[in-house]
Length: 125
Image (tube, rainbow, N blue to C red; front, top):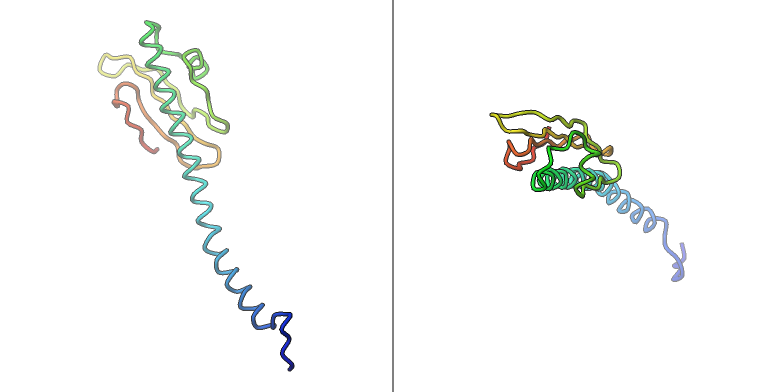
């Protein structure tokens, strides 16, 4: 076989394709995990923003908002694809409280807090 300085041999092309395939096999699952973490971050951020809106309602002397849509009156703006899977007004140890769960449609995780009973802590559910 004659040497051709203008092209690649079949072996060089096969090795290159194998390396690209290995890199893709590693990168694609990792990308999916990064995406889910970003979705979870958005859901957590929405839950924190909802807690700020609840605090704004309390500071203004209003009763606790009865639904997530009422939170918008106090500055809460929901992110795209994030929703409340639970929003419940309750009394914990004689203190009015809001039990909230948020979830992004791209993630299987739901995020939970009871405000102010949990002291602002957010947990996975």
